[in-house]
Amino acid sequence: MFTTNCSFLENELLDVVRLFKRRPQVLEHSFRFEEGVFYNAFCVDGQAFSFEDREQVCSELQFKRLERRFAKLRLYEILSNLYGETMPWGALTGIRPTKLAYMEKENGRDFTKLFNRMQVREDNIKLVADILKTQEGIYEKKDGNTDLFVSIPFCPTKCAYCSFITAPIDKTRHFLPAYLDALDKELASAKESVGNLRSIYIGGGTPFALDASDLERVLKGLDGIFKTCNPNAEYTVEAGRPDVFSDEKLALLKEYGVTRICINPQSFSDQTLQKIGRKHTEADIYRAFDMAEKYDFDINVDLIAGLTDETPEVFTQSVEKAVATGAENITVHCLSLKSGAKLKEENDYLENDFISAMVASSRDILSKNGYAPYYMYRQKYQVGNNENVGWTKAGKACVYNIDIMEETADNLALGANAVSKRVFTEKGLITRFASQKDLKTYIENVDTLIEKRREFFK
Image (cartoon, rainbow, N blue to C red; front, top):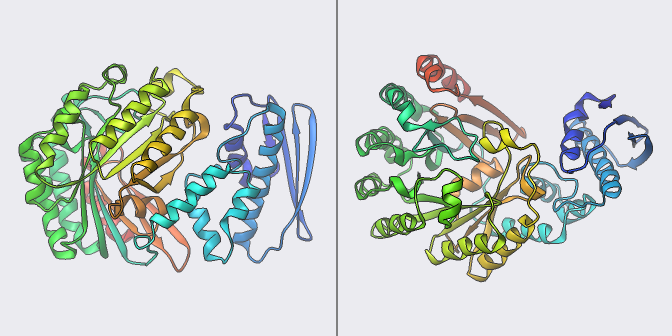
């Protein structure tokens, strides 16, 4: 049972509770602010705690931030002491620690002081500092900058850890003609909403689950935007699983100006791939790289730490094998329980005693092989309360990933289950507009959706 006299803090405090495997049966909280002092009182399973934190407040926005910060920190300290656990990111529960670091820097403060106060582990403070350094020359907060995302929500099969609104294409193929018709309409209307185009990203799902003719239809729809708005923009296609690669599809990407692809094995272990529902092997991964080699794409690779029954040794081998491919970017995700995923239905708390060792080994291997961390985000219900980090070779960072994670540019997102964002840098405001999630509803409402999005981007 949980009660608080401050509804604003309810979800924030529950996020702190969820960090721990052991959790209070009864948690009571009260807050008040008087004469520059933030008062937080807690009762945790009958034990009472009270705290006073004094800080100068200059605005309502700053007051809210401090109200949230002190309440979360104090509850974290209580639970950490009671249960004998510390978290890699301390009392920070937000998904983008780098955004908080930038905010501190923009206000003339050393972000490390705040991170130390929130009990973030020293190696993670260094990780954030390294990411900010790698982003230099790419990170740009400027109204009107735009990234364009196109959603292809079809996959060969559904992976056990996946929560996206996708289904095996064999079960949804009957929607595909109408979906492409709807997407054609969206693409035809999108150009007027594009500002300074920084990148295009076709994602999913698995875009390469489409036949070559259908894939070319999407590329043709984007061609006018790409060539007119910025033919030098970064252009990425999340080709995805190695078992759907073909030379014909790769040749199409090159023909239409794509500069970067994603090959997403998640693991190089055949045993793991079978357990998570993948229909390809380690050998297929290498074949995909061999096919892509002659087209000179920059390549992004995704790996997941904490997959079913994987040991640190097996995961470490996957990281080493990913490095050996020569991929320009390697992102290490930590498994996260999400609604809609088969694993979420079967578990309410994921345990993996090895996850921190996996994260540490990936950092060591990638840094020793010339990769630098360039973006990072965190998720709720993440194994070990760790993080997802993208690593890049020098000069090969993915612009789209940086813009999206740091929320520094508009994101014009088309297709089902796509979320557009407007970023108003001067106002410090971000607004969102979501498309319908399921295919049928999206297709039936696409004309109305186009009009609403047009108004959203005015």
